[in-house]
Structures are given as structure tokens and as C-alpha cells.
Length: 76
Image (cartoon, rainbow, N blue to C red; front, side, top):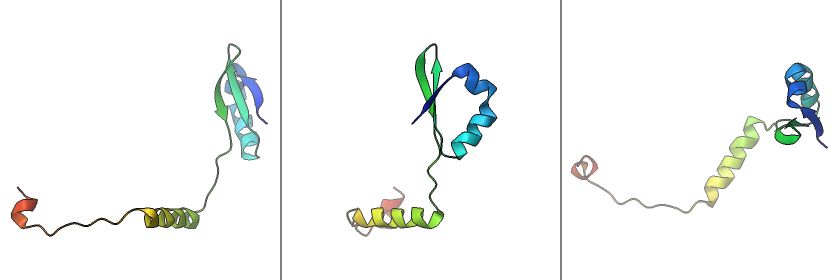
């Protein structure tokens, strides 16, 4: 659950807030009583998982066919 903090407090305690966020906490920053931003931990995903997700996505794309072309058509 987010903890509400004012923009002034976020500015004054930014390093401390980042430390807490790195430990899994999150904050909603308010200005004049209205929520304006959220500070949340980044979801970390290692490089291998990213590549696997990309390859799975590419497999779902429809195949494309490109007809042969001449040099003149290519540079026309």
C-alpha cells in the first residue's frame, strides 16, 4: 500500500524515500492535497527473460512475403 507524502517532504527526504522504495515500499506524492505522482519500485527482469519474451512475441507475428525486386525498383 502506498504511503502519502507531500511534495515538500518528498523533496526534503528524497534519498531516504529512494532507499525505502528499493526495499519494496511505495509512495504517493501529493501537492495541495491532490495526488500528483507515485514513486514505486522498478520491476527487475534479467536480460535472458527479456530476450525470451521478445522471441515469444516475434513468433506470434504473421509471416511477411517480399517479392523479388530489381536494383532499379529499389533505388527509383
